[in-house]
Structures are given as structure tokens and as C-alpha cells.
Length: 135
Image 1 (cartoon, helix red, strand yellow):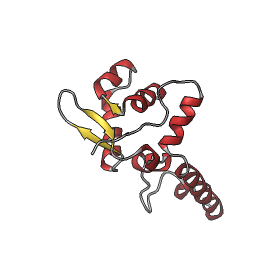
Image 2: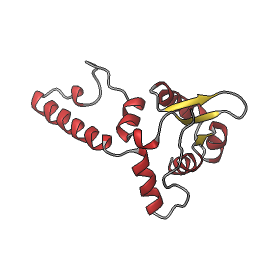
Image 3: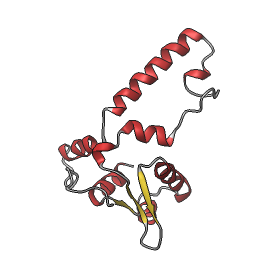
């Protein structure tokens, strides 16, 4: 997924066919994830033979918390995963607090900050852009 992110960061455009082929990611897995991000207002889907996905808003306005919530939304009162799946109330409370702390930390990391980290790690072409979305 790192190479996909690097290409997406560099070009601001994600071609589904190119990336599923070059990274051996099944299209049937990747497309629903991209559609979830699109429904959440993080990506905009572009139809047609040269279509793909692009960011719906600036990188500095998208956080890792936004991405997590879009891909794995919590269902209120759902059983079977997360803190609600634990039967002991005290443990459930601690896990819920930890989950809230983690999401708060993820909300502090923007895609822009992530791009800077990639650039600092020595990968060229991923620094701040003059424009990273189209209106």
C-alpha cells in the first residue's frame, strides 16, 4: 500500500487498473475501499476509460482518523468487535478510552503531514503541493 500512496501523493490521481495490476492487489478488494472513501467525501471518483480517483479536498484537511472512520465505521450497539465485544464492563471501559485516545492521535495526523514524513524518509516528489484537488 505504501507504493500506491506514494504514486497517489505524487500525481494526486489514482488509476485503479494501473495500481491493481502493478501491486497485485485484487480489484475486488481495492475498489470497495475506494468507494467507501468516496462516499465519505475523501475521494472523488471519475468515470471513463481514463478515470480513477482524486482527493476531494486538500491534503491538510484529511486526517488518518477520517480515513479509518470511512473504511471501518463503528456500528452503534454492534457486537463482535471493538470494546463492545468484551464482556467485563471495566475492561470494556478501558478499551473504549484507548480507542478514543488512538482516534484523537490519528485526527492530529493529516495526509499533508504524512506526505512530509514520506519526503523526509528520502522519497522524492511527495512534499507539499501547490494544489492537490480540483474544483
